[in-house]
Length: 202
Ligand SMILES: [Fe+2]
Image (cartoon, rainbow, N blue to C red):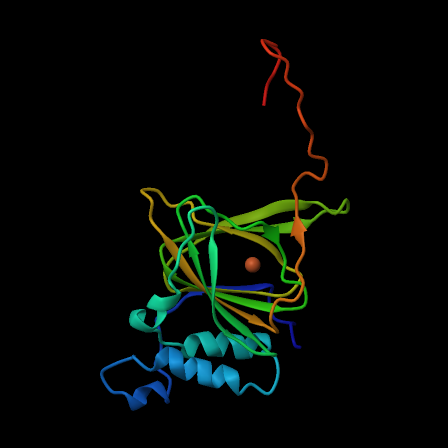
């Protein structure tokens, strides 16, 4: 897999109509179906440029995505749209305040398109001690595309106010089989608290 391109490709794009989707003039109703048909015929995993082109050509219909737009009260929800040996397409739905763990996508290329709301992505780098140190935080508006190579470490969150939801489309290629979660502190400490102890701080 060619991953020589920059670590991440983040840009705001307008949806583009594919030649196949243009067979339905005036409507994009077939867009997700066309994409799934393309994914089901992949001869192998995407490289970075192929994934970028896939997202550029993608045109999505809210009605096609509606069955996958499902939220969970306790944590962000991953709703699978398509899975085969070379890729997995998911719609992730985030309530306000929900966030992923700090993680990489070990062995997979990951493309994320923001469909609704604003995603906050924090990129981390690994310290010699194996910890995750934050390097950059950025906001990804609707239409933004971020493509991460397998060893890139990041965290995605919905930090919007007023309870606004966040919906993101994720394409992993090959499908995520293993990923690593990181902690900014490998030595979590249980702080003993004694009743009425005035020195207790968190
Ligand atoms: Fe991720």
